[in-house]
Image 1: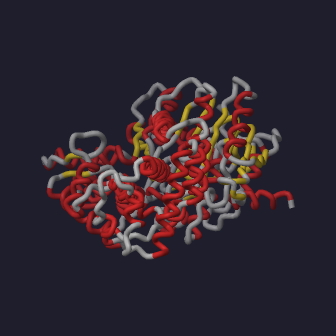
Image 2 (image 1 turned 45 degrees about the vertical axis):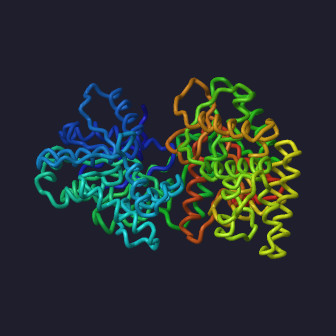
Length: 599
């Protein structure tokens, strides 16, 4: 393997802190592994004294496999930060004979069961999946950013978090996020454990430093002090995990922590063609909070970026299918997207056309499942409008302006229509009657229409979409409408449709890999990987980027776009659907930035 001059300089760093800023495809893992050998050869550092840390188990395993192929010595230590923290906790538990129990995974008693119990004790009703996801997302952020519970402005979260913390503390329990805080506090307050770590390890290397959170960096500071033989490989332009505590700010201000830190730059991309590298460099320079660097290409081959405009999901899928059918068997192709929900339409067509594919998804589409369940309830109520329990589940989502006490106090005669009962009630105001009459009129139509037109009518003639849009943040409602109708045209009943979505979801959640050269993946899950051909799809403004009030959010969305672009080695296609559910939409903001290149 040929080592470049830039790589040699970074590999030859001996003692003290260093930050290696490595652009995509620059061979940073090669640098990290060769530095292990360099330290052994020139500094007589034993392999087992170098602790090599990274974020994911897959990355740690890959690094170990590559290192084992480079040398016969298999004593080098590769670990995730969490696995290292877990070992610190086990050392502490053994020394002080404290039985700490991890409540993760599918254990008989795990953190989800505990939280459900706490919810029920406080609110007398079980939490929804959204409630659980919301709590653990914020709890993880709190732990990773070293925040106190009272830093959050939600009394609901604070109340549950305090009870969750208290229960774990009283019963010597800890979860995945507690690993970091437990390990940090042990190392900070227990000199014996810290001495054991320092005796075992003299040098510390952190791969994918942009993915580390504040508490992970603070753990590194403790174990590396005072020699500070800490070597970080990172690309601040690929920091895309703020939702789990990663933040480029630490890297940008690292010289305030390590005054004598040395910087090394790996700015040559060995992966992608010249056009792809030029585009990625141009896009990322629109960000302000970053290290200034220019990405260069080692590959002079020119393959123009293809900007593809399609009408909708259906024509986008036709374009994808054509690219797959024309694909060289010796190459692979990845279909990448910002949001998990994009996987449904692609998987639906690939399965229908009997095309095998692999997927990299962290799957959670509660918003889609909520809409599907509501459609099921509305259609079922249309077929049986005397079912009060069904009506209770939907009335407030249809903008009928009827109070809960009124609905729950209804006295319905045997087999009598609930809507007729309401219309016969003199208590109901005229505008409410008009809304109920409209609902009855629409539901009478729903019974006599095919599934596709029934759903279309519900979307367009009732107040349901208005309700969903108001009550769920960042939900791509137009996309959800379009994808449901895209599926619905192939089915006759709502139960068949629900089963189809359930089967697709089951397929997408299955993490088994096959020999296919076709991959579908979120950009987040594709990070660190590369593909010959990349189709970056669903580039609709508001869906990608997703906007918020924070300027930093747009910078992270741009970093995410940058990561997507730089997965491509040979061909890159940027695909923009012009319509969402028959409504014209704008292309991604990043399209406009690309247009400026030619001006």
